[in-house]
Image 1 (cartoon, rainbow, N blue to C red):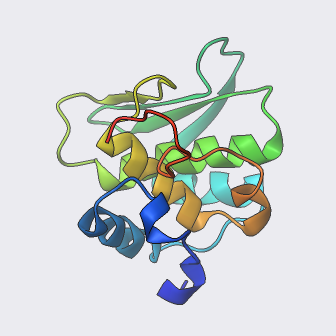
Image 2 (image 1 turned 45 degrees about the vertical axis):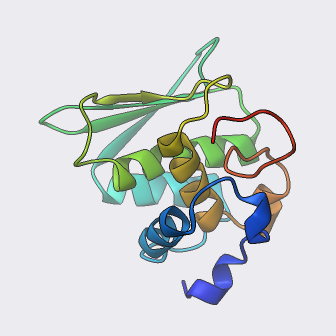
Length: 149
């Protein structure tokens, strides 16, 4: 994928630094645009991540890593566009935050949106096809609410 194909929202609406945006987008350029769930699963499996669909109640997704490998758990009853977003979001954590973590478990929490959460979310957005981008809410975009900067 080329940089001009990322088609990001206007910068004032992205609640991240320009440096962070550039770093995330550069990493995203190493992967293809994702249109279907099967392709999202495939890029994860190509990186050695096992995908497991589970009947989670409060989580939509979780990434667990150890010395042997990684497992990405996804809530099994999500709509396809949300499933793709969750897979790409957790894959973003795997790709962006692999070497600088004290914790090997990533899970999203809707009330606390940290810098790393926004980075993983932007990474997922960069890889997502337009129909996915338009159908889910993104944590890195400022919607006028009190999100952590």
